[in-house]
Image (tube, rainbow, N blue to C red; front, side, top):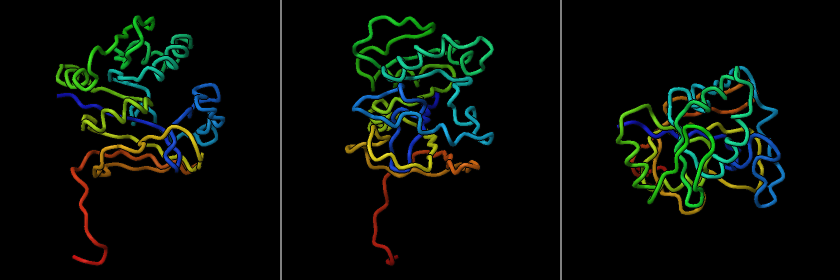
Amino acid sequence: MRKLIASTFVSLDGVMQAPGGPEEDPAGNFTLGGWTFAFWDDAMDLSAAGFDGTDRELVLGRKTYEIFAAYWPHQAEDNPIAKTFNAAKKHVASRTLKSLQWNNSSVLRGDIISAVTALKAQPGPDLQIIGSGNLIQTLQAASLIDEYNAWVYPVVLGRGKRLFENGSKPCALRLVASKVSTTGVVMSTYVPAGDIRLGTVGQS
């Protein structure tokens, strides 16, 4: 069974909304879009965390899909990320989209949990979620995500859509890789590690 991997940029207070630019997602009067801009450096390997979709199929929520579809098909042909995204299979979780214009795109029909479970059982490359906060929360609650790549930026945004909202399923995670950029971005990879172990500090 192929893995389902979720990768996201997140602020120190857990916000993932509009990391790429002011117009990316202004929902809820969010005015801090583009908050990752000042922190990029050469140590931040998008491919290592799956942010460029290399050798993977994309699983996207409707909003992220629409943002990507409005941008990547119109970039230069020699742009490596555009080339990868445009060629990749794209599976879109949406109840409202009826037709998709971006090539190699299809809507996941019916119950999203069943649809993604079926996708994971099919042969092919691993599946990659980028952004798509609502979709991550739905699939996390169903224990379908096999790996999380969270890049935590040294900013506090104070408001906006969060990676894990109230109602997320409690679970433990195990850190399997971590690196820090020269600008202070902590790039971590986690895998599920079962239930949370409870106890009292100081007692064995």
